Amino acid sequence: MFIDSHAHLEFDEYAADFPQVLERAKSAQVEAILNIGTSVEHSKKTVALASQYPHIFAAIGIHPHDGKDTPDHYLDILKELARKPKVVAIGEIGLDYFYKHSTPDIQKQRFEEQVCLAKELNLPISIHCREAFQNIIDILNRSQYFKGVFHCFTGSLAEAKKALDMGFYISISGIVTFKKSTVLQEVVKELPLEKMLIETDAPFLAPEPNRGKRNEPAFVVQTAKKIAELKHIPLEEVAKVTTQNTKKLFGLLSSYV
Ligand code: NI
Image (cartoon, rainbow, N blue to C red; front, side):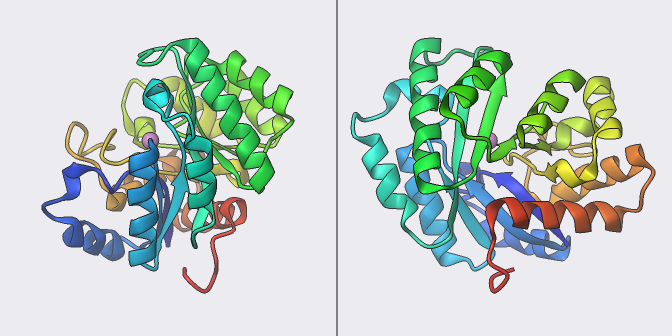
């Protein structure tokens, strides 16, 4: 059994064939999906999905790209949403200095506000980090909150070790299956499986052999296979340990999955 720890199934990309997407996930033994909000609107849709499907869980939050479009009272809205059943994390939140759709100052402010919210609610965070590792670390240190995961990890081995030292997990996406991802492959070889989650980040970043196509939770198995190959361990072990890690971090209720 596998868990896709980061997907965006509320996106329009799934409007036409959502039941089939879930069916294929089930056939691929993906037993649970953590769906992740990126804005107020998407967080509401995510909570709605979780209420509708027993094996879908919700994270709510404002993505760094969306920081500038956020209503003033967004923290109140998130706080209210966090009370709904099956909301298990705040995310995805973080900093993205590659695209800079929002200015770094706005991004930093939103990130810190949401880390504080997570701390107040004692919910783990799903962190988006692109070319902003040191600023992320500074804000986490200032907030003194170290519960969560660096989602879709693409940093260096030193950064991965730093994240683990602070108490975070790292999540491996389909990027690890790409031929040129030698740094990430090294990270997977070096770091303990006990600190890894797996994810699709669907609809983005489909792993090989589906690279370039729309991603979906069933494809998380390809990422798990690559990890097994890199670490020379059975696929079953990757499935078992990453599932345990995900349940432990997000406290997914065993009555659901
Ligand atoms: Ni994402």
